[in-house]
Length: 100
Image (cartoon, rainbow, N blue to C red; front, side, top):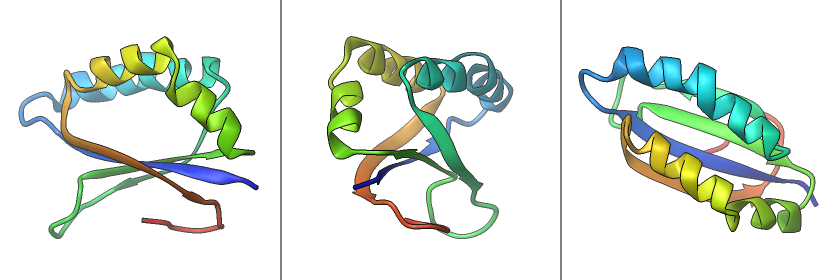
C-alpha cells in the first residue's frame, strides 16, 4: 500500500533566501537520490498553521522506513534544521489531493 510522508515546518526568520537555495540545491536532489520523489509542496499564506507542508509519496511503508532509518536521512534532516524550526513529520496512507 502506498504511503505519504507529510513534513511540516516554519522557515527561520531572516533565513528565507538561504532556505530556498538549500531546498533547490540540496534538499530535493538529496531526497531524490534516496529514491524518494516529492509529490506536493504547500506554502501557508495566512493562518495559524505550519508555513510549509511537503509530501512525498512512496510505494510501500517498508521502503519509506528504510530511508527514514538511514544515516543519509539523518544528515539531511540536520541540514534542514539549520533553516527551519518546528519540523515535524508523519506517515499516512496515500490518497490523492491535499493531506494534512
